[in-house]
Image 1: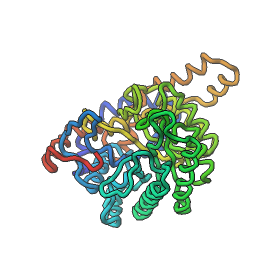
Image 2: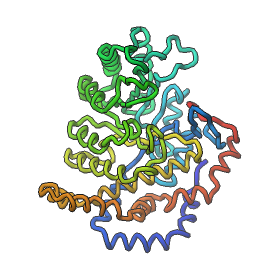
Image 3: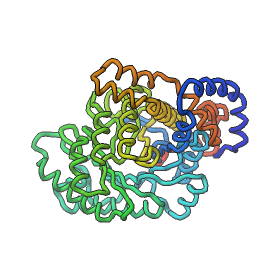
Image 4: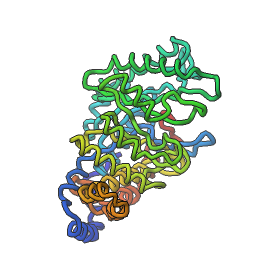
Length: 424
């Protein structure tokens, strides 16, 4: 279901007076507000197709009702989010969960809603119905060349689907690894994986990118074949100029300094994109900014500094994506919260006084450097983010509007209370 523009305007009326007061105060106290708002308006975060349904854990799933039953309904849900926040204008698909039966029709539907297709995601971490060979002991690393070939062919198929939809990138995450010492020859596993990735790389169109995503653990807990950013960087460096590292915020060991990782990857020109989420213990896939908001700000601080140093556009220079799962929340509400948290941290990072911070760093003035960062982080930029939405025709408060219009109730009435999104 979609929301008529006049309905959004009506819900904004009740909030407009308070917003104008807050925005006027913010604009009077901060420099360069107009320029900042233009950057916020341009910044888009891709919504993953798999995050639109109620998720779960290995212990259970508690469906909330109204989940999208097919790819068309997933696109409708993302269009709904985009109508509300005007920052969710891209879709990231997972294949084979969301293979389009009619690519031209799907592309046209997305375009009608003002949406584009972001990175395509392959899946060799599961055995699919009718699959000839199993990935139980790995896919691209497998000791059996036939299994490796099957994984390569799947990724080539994903590229083909992406070309039909207008995507320009492929994300490869591998669950390959080992659970016990001695199970795997690390060197051979790396060589097999590299050879497989090279075969996929050869099928990339000239204007495409491949993102090699790493993860320190799970489902293999002794070793993973693309276990950290260094291993991913090694693969992408060997693959070529169209290969980049993708950072998922939940794919690190506890207390990893992610802001340092992204800084160095940017310096090397090998940071390709992001999967935003949050975590307390591991790959929890929680709402962005719900656990470690200051860490998210520090990451954005390095991203903005590094992108500016390389002359990169903030909105287009990297692939910005959410990768989250929802077990106790309405998925659409959670995604609205996540996008809002991303936009807030991005806005705060734009407020950092780079000149003063550089001077403090050059003078080893540790206290001043800390104060400069925390001053930006403690600045309430919600009125700026809301104003950017308002100027684009979105809702001043997307979550409140979603609830006021009883969207979930209407989705349940339309789709039923026992639906399950594909891939879940």
